[in-house]
Length: 313
Image 1 (tube, rainbow, N blue to C red):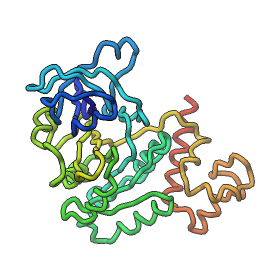
Image 2: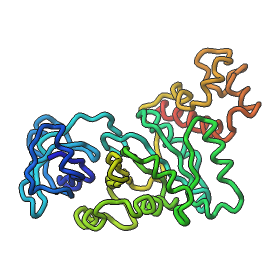
Image 3: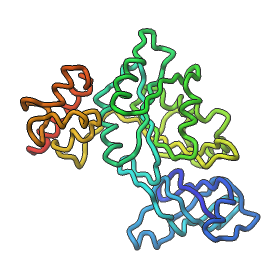
């Protein structure tokens, strides 16, 4: 049988078999007694010998040991098309990073760090500002304008009243999407709103993998049924984060992770311009002319200094 690992805890892997018809393309004949659902599996010893560890998101082949209790063994890990380092997960197609418009106010430095992390791993990123229902001052439009000018897809939504949720759900269809954001931004509420009426076997999944109702302690994939004619869709829920360090990056590389800088760098006097202290800098000129956002640029300077100091030690 073929399925996808949706959670791993203490050496057990929970494999979601969405439809036994999915095994047709791997050349197996399925016993009619096997059914879709969550199978609790161990990994065969061969993976340890080859120093291969199954990851959440892996597509796998499994052998069923006990259909009644849905227990089995993972016998093969299918090829991965992507692999994230943090969180450690395979086969992610895109990321949705969620921040609130207010209560709490968005931490844009943290948001920019997440965008850089996704750029490093070549994962397309959608920015989602939640709590539109609390936006009495109209800040959402300003936030959206900042990041759309950088080339990002930006949505403003309300998990509370459902505004924009259908638009976000449509972007999940047929993809495995990692959803992340700091605590308090309504991430869990938004994920629950996205599942409403479409998640498969909610009770069975919750009971099988002991999914918390309010707090995410482990990365886990939530299978979402978008309809019979749609491909499988999954949400990867990750623990909330409040800080995010930059890893495997030199200060000279940082500007390449700010896509809005690229169109102005040709006007820099010096090659390898850091866009901070050099004269005749195209990026700084664009900043003065309002073509580069001040908030983004200030965060760039802070991160550049952080990398510069880190390098000394």
